[in-house]
Image (cartoon, rainbow, N blue to C red; front, side, top):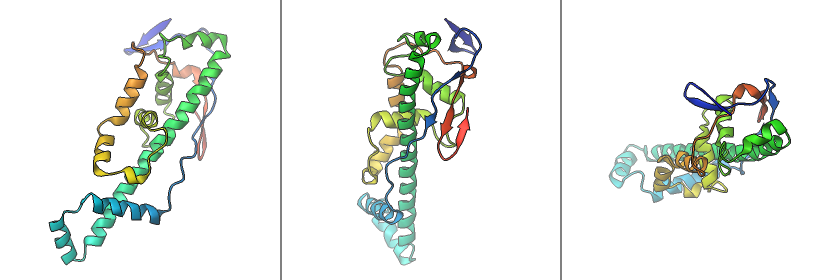
Amino acid sequence: MVRILNDRKYVEIPGDAAFELPPLVLRSGPRMDEINELTYVAGRIVDAEALIPGAVQDALNAENLLDDSRLGLAANLIAEYRQFVEHWVWGESVLEWIHQCETSFEARPVLRKLLRPDVWPHAGRSSFVTLLEDKQATDEGIELEDAMGYRLTFRQPPPIEFFSEKFLLWLHSSLGRAAFAKWAGSFGGTDASLPPERFQFFVMSDEIREV
């Protein structure tokens, strides 16, 4: 059964008890290179992509500002890369958590029937992602749809060497959200959400939070 509240569809679960789900454990990401190495590679990208045009370089060089400008662009690129990796790690962690939740649902007769494909697309299980959003379970600055989309697109996060200007344009053109939407809707239809008040779990990263 499905109930509708404020234009949102929620699955109806018998009773009023809250269910404990497995903890969402934020996994460690791939090893980040030392800052000196990241800065060196980012600087090479700035030069190779000609992000500072020749005429501008001459003007900056005349005022001894070229190195500062180059370093600033490299720092921005490193920040973009680290933000991408943080999102990817969240996506990886959530995918693993979803698999654990599926096992937990299968072990409970009252929840097992909710795993029908007409409630959640088998390949998507996007209702688990919506539950995390409803429970405000993510770290500040993390957009779950981007995080999931990046993880679905990249089995491992690409190294910073890939972060050319064209790659960043591709990344910023709704890549993550488009990948998530395709995954979530892979079986067609509209997902019904899990009622957030019926589920509890811990988020374990640098700190442990109950949501």
